[in-house]
Length: 568
Image 1: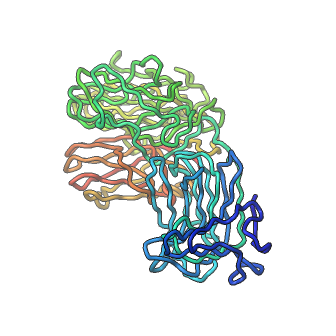
Image 2: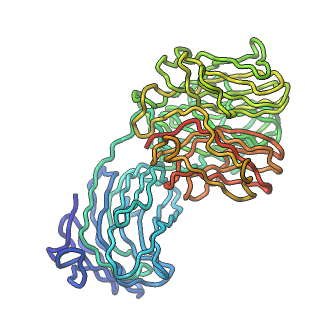
Image 3: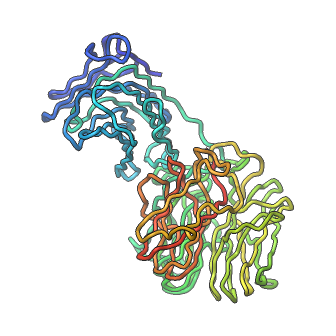
C-alpha cells in the first residue's frame, strides 16, 4: 500500500517517484490548499509548448487489482475541449484507463478506456465538478483482459461499475497523477492519496466471464469458406482473452451462402462431430449462438457442410474459465452428442410434447441443474414454434425456436432440468415437426454463489414491445434485468431468447450492455414478415440494463424471454 498526505514536504515519499516536469510545468508540495493537515501536492501545467507535470507510483510486478483513492481540488482549468486528469492507470508506457474532469462549461467527469485495438472509448460519469472545491475520487480497476473491472466512486457515490470492460492488459504497472502534455493544462491540488495494489482472486473453473461483443472472425474481409472446408479463428490470448480458456460463447452468422447447407463448430484439432450449429439456404443471413470448447491450440474450427462457399462472422460475447468445474453453477462443455432425433422414429405432432432424458446420459451427471443444447426443427408441415422447459414444470409463455413450413431452423437452448432428469419440448403448431437436439454442455447443480456462476431461471418474459410500441428503425430499446424478480443488483450478464415478430423489412438486432458503445455485431437477422428467434448471451450495463438496436428500415416488435443470469 502507498499512502501519503504530503505533510513531509516531498512528492517522492511513500512509494512515489520523483515528479516529472518540463517547460513551464511544475509539481511540488504546497501550503496554498489542503484537504487535511497543512499541505497538498500541487500540479501546474500551462498551454505553453512542452509544458508537462506529473508524479507517479510504480507498482510491483504481478499486480492486476488497484484501488486508487484521493482528494482533488481543480482550481484552474485549461483550454475548453481538453481535460485535467485525476487517476491514470498504466501498463508499461501505455495508459489504458483514466478518469478526468473535462475543461469548459460545467466540468463534466469522464472515464476513458483504451480497448485492445487501441481505440479510446469515453463514458460520461454524469456528474459535474465545480472549480475550487475538494472532491473524493476512488477508482477501482482489475486488469483482466477482455473482462476487466472498472468502478468509479465520487464523493462516496458509486457512479460506474462494470466487470466487462475490454482492455488488452492483465496487469497494472504504474499509477500516475497529473498531466502528460500541455493540452491537459490546469492547476490541481491533490491530498490524502492511498493506492492499494495486489493480485485479484481468479474466477473459479467453469464460471463465465462476459465481454462486450467483439468481432473475432469476418471472412468477408478475406475469402469465403469453401464447400466442405473449415476455417479456424484464435480465441485464447486474443483481444484480451486469457491464454487458457475452457470454452467460448459467440454469435455465429452465415451470410452470402451460395447454396443450402449447415455449419459445425468444434474445438480446433479434434474430430468434427456429427452436429450442426447453423442451418442455411442460399443467400440467407442466419445467426445462432454457439457455445463450444476451445482447442488445445486456442482455436475454434467452423466447417462448411455445403456444396457452395459461404462467408462467416463470429462475434464473441464471453468465455468460460479453464479448469475442472466444481462449484454450483459452473459450466462443463461437452463434445456435441445427439440427445434426440425424431427422424429415426416419428415426427412430433402439433401441440404435442416430447421429453428427453438428459441427466445421467451422454456425459451429463445426475447432479446437473441445467443443460445447453442446439435444437433444430426440420421438415415442419406448418408454421409454429418450439418451447423448451423443465419436465414436470408449468409450460411457460415463451418460444425457443420459430419456424415456417418446410424450414430447417436451429437455435441454442439453455434450460433447467426437471426433477425427473428430463427436459420437455412442445411443438406449438397445427402440423408435425421433426426435432434434433445436440448437447453442448451442462451447469453443475447446487446453489450458485461464485462470480460468473450461472443461475437458471426457466423462460420468463422480460420484454414484449407488442402491448406498447415497436422499436423504430435505427433506434433502441433498453430493459431492466438487474434488481428485478430476484436477480442481483450487480448481475454480470444475462441469457435470454430474443424474438423479432413479423418485421416489415429486412434487418438485424444488436444486443449490448446499456451505456456502452454499440458494437459492430448482430444477434438476430431477419427478413420482412419473418418471425425468428435466437439465444443471446450479453453483459449487463452498469445501470442494470441491456440495450437492443434495430438496424432496419422498418419498426420491429421484440420479445425477450430470460433463461438465466451470471452472478456478480
